[in-house]
Picture 1 (cartoon, helix red, strand yellow):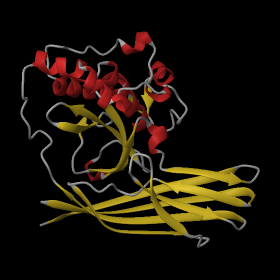
Picture 2 (cartoon, rainbow, N blue to C red; picture 1 turned 180 degrees about the horizontal axis):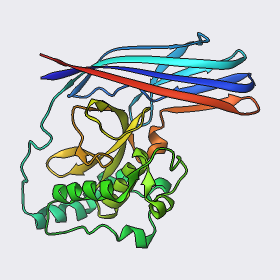
Picture 3 (cartoon, rainbow, N blue to C red; picture 1 turned 120 degrees about the vertical axis):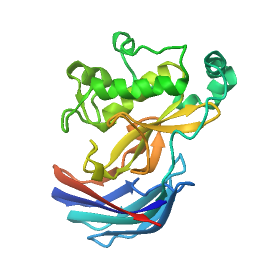
Picture 4 (tube, rainbow, N blue to C red; picture 1 turned 45 degrees about the vertical axis):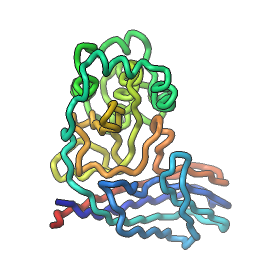
Length: 285
């Protein structure tokens, strides 16, 4: 059984003074993988500036725009259609005992191979007294600890839109225990990496027909590496294993690698920005 999704992304920027020149990079295109097939993509902007497709350092598709004529307002709209296969995220067996599994994560070769996603970043760092809160149990499998971590983060933070921004540190967020999906994902990554488990930040879309928590723009979750199984998605915002409702766009070390929009503007004064995303899905035979 597969699901067909239609995703519409819209953004509108209005500036106090004319923008003389601008460059944008959108990281909003659903990623293609064995379980996720992109069927169509369309992109347009109100100024009819030309765009081109490229890939970022991690190999994910970007849309780039160069504006060479002045403007005070511009809107963007992207539409995607894709098919996603329904899979069972628990369809695996533990291949060896806990002690043997733990030893594999300590091997130098393993740590070298996965170094980018074991590394602390400014957005995935914790003070020592905060990093000791989660009780990792070495007599349990890595997957079991990650399930417990998923639940722990879900219960630790209250989902509160507007409580943080992209510059809020995890320690600041934990002082008031309010955050959004990016904070949940960063906290999960920080603790998983602290215990030697490679973990990457994932950006994408969430089909919210089932009442999940998540932003009205883009969602964030994580993928952790489990030996003999591979990368497994965890959504601590909703205490879920990532499933067919999670539509991946990109992954990286943290939000800074996966920001949906980056740009350079030659202008002065402020601006207002509005974003919206609609995700519609239906079953296909």
